[in-house]
Length: 526
Image: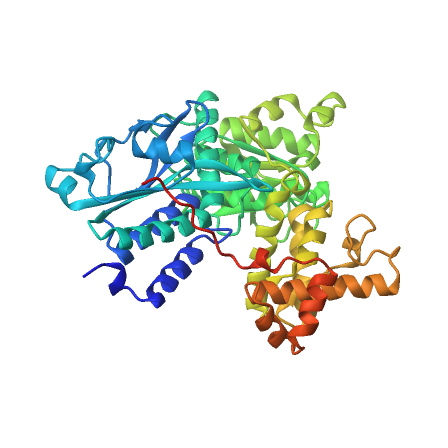
């Protein structure tokens, strides 16, 4: 019996839903894509499923992720070479009813047996990413081995795989960038050629942008070492989260990570906090106290805003790093300590050096592996995924049934300059969740600081009628999105007549087809 006839529509929808769940904004890229291929293969009986991704530097297609391990892991295809190369070059799918009957089927990567070549069909579809109106960029191919079926059934599978390829195009673009990032890290001496994917235990870090993924790659490379790390970036960019990720990826992960914000305590208390004190060492020292270096023994110590340390404290921190020894205040006894130091600052330490406010020898000790964290306004593609992450977190915490962020609210979030970075975005989303009493975060749920003349749909220069029209468009667009472009369903959801929805769609020049999510099937060569 034909495979596709034995699979009802519910199975297809269930598979698509599973795949969409795997592609959440904070999902680990490679594991989620491998799981997606696994879902495809196990649901539809594919013998193999794999992605070939175009390497922009070498100009070749490389087998990226697979379900079923290839025998030749470095197999490559030039554009136009073999079936995969032809699909990439033309941007059109190809269906081969039986592998052995097609002279241009190269069988490069998997070393299929003669029996398999006689019993398996092959389907390859292009992965195309929309780049501008009417144009799409070819990123690679999605291909499967499937038991030989009728041409009608194979064409149906091909059509379904084109839909899947459209869904994963953004993720494939990220995989393509990962290839470039790995080359960059190898060139910089930060990654060995044999290094595979490194998982980072940091569920609260959401990174979609190329610049932030480079940061995470650097974190993954330095974490297993003993090297001192200096995290640099504006306040609120997530330096503490990255420090936690470095510790979690180190051999010291089962030992404590001790944290201190050097700007949070007056200078006269910092030394006592870091190195501890003996009873009677100073007024108020009524008992022995262990310092953070002692408490962090065999673990890690994170010193945030290290530029705020006094010169005297800097000298003692330097000694602790160099000699691995400390003395409690009021004691002559030397204590051995073994801590992995992670530091952070938003200050220009180089300027503090020239001003004599920071020791040069300490600067070179902590600057072994600097990591520069970009501000949120420099990585705007991260804003929406981070906002959605906070939305889900706070909706769960406050027992709210909020499902998404409206389009105008997204525009406000993306256009705002975020001087407080991720910390400010977190506070913004918490406030929005608290005051929202519906299922959608709208622009008026966001703080007044976001309602600027440059980015607000409720600009003060608009008249009352224009502001109402903007709000009406927002409601209508949201309804059409929810109804997948079906105006009749949108009218039902809005509890108005179809005629009114149709009138408003024409009035505001809204194209409902944009929200259907459907992809037209592209015909492949015979």
